[in-house]
Length: 512
Image 1 (cartoon, rainbow, N blue to C red):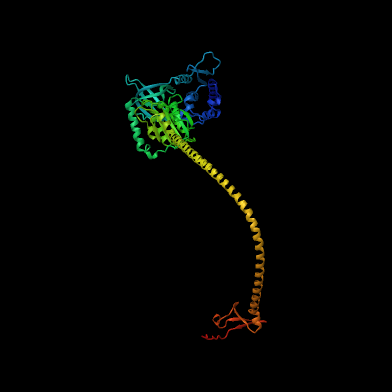
Image 2 (tube, helix red, strand yellow; image 1 turned 60 degrees about the horizontal axis):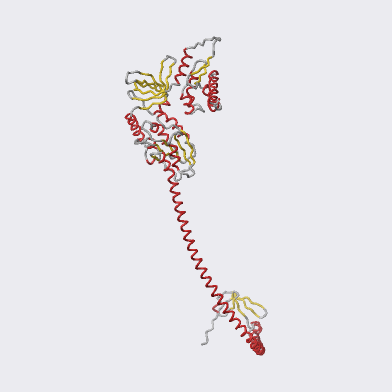
């Protein structure tokens, strides 16, 4: 590990933290710094692969980190408030005059040039791809002046522009000197086409390509949840779109997770990509991208192929609310639902809730109306019932008075009747006694006659006289038709039983 680079990065990190008034790990952690030095990372693409550095930190600190990592001198570089490069050089031999080597001098010059961010417009004069990075020439159409340019492959892919000789482009970046030969070049971090015609052509070509892949088909689009609750929102904190969206969203208890992103021009692509990827594993019902209106040039980021594919592969429904005058962005076409404005996107998400609220209000009115009708009907029924009760009680009281008069009359009649009944009961008692004595005599006679009959018909008496009972299977045999040959019968006599088997059956003819 390069101990000097490690110390330089830590010293720069500490000064940067003091300048921002934050803790040092907010700038870069020790682990991140050690990984940069250990892997000797000297490109923006390499920095993006380091844990702890994303596109936002790369945009903010990438140049200073790469300047330190690409420096061959013992120099610690920083930018002061005026944007100029300051340096702390390890003096050799205590000399008062500071003498620079060519390498150190070029490092210092490059540090200063990195602060000179500009946009350059020109015609592409040559294109050369080496190691995935692109080296191209940019020519002034007026006087033929040229400058050598380069763009790292990551930024080239984000730009979404295929460089070709003769096309007019606008690039953003900073100048730098290539140390091995001292040649100055322009390091671009974004490329965009110049002219509405070129932009239209690029738009139509990409649209046709994605359309042929089926990215805009209706069957690929995911339905918006009926009652969306958790919303992921991507837009700029400074724009009016966020205000329009929130104002028109309605107060239905939405949970909004906001991601601040650039939304203007091609340079917004990295920020938008990061925002979409941030929400990939978040618990949301729908993802919303909104921005205000603008020209085709300002909507370049929403026609970027990488962003369109990222949205096409997003796992949750995506709603776009990109304001535009005439052209529909490719993000609008690939989104599951597109609205012409942020306000339209907000109303789309609120629609099902508003419909539900309207139904609730309607049901509330209907329920209240039904309640009033029922209450009115009950009041009418109660009044009728009260009137009927009053009439019924009057009738009951009148009937009670009549019963009272009749009871008094009956009471007097009962007194007279009781006297007559007493005489009658005395006479009836005497009659009943005489009648009961007569009935008792008659009953005794009947019992005597029954006892004599029972004795006469007693089977035991018959057995004693020499008769017998024949039984088959416990039943008394009364006819020869009840038995058969070889059947076993039981003969009951006065003093015992005889078991016999039938050997012959003789029938007696009827005497008629």
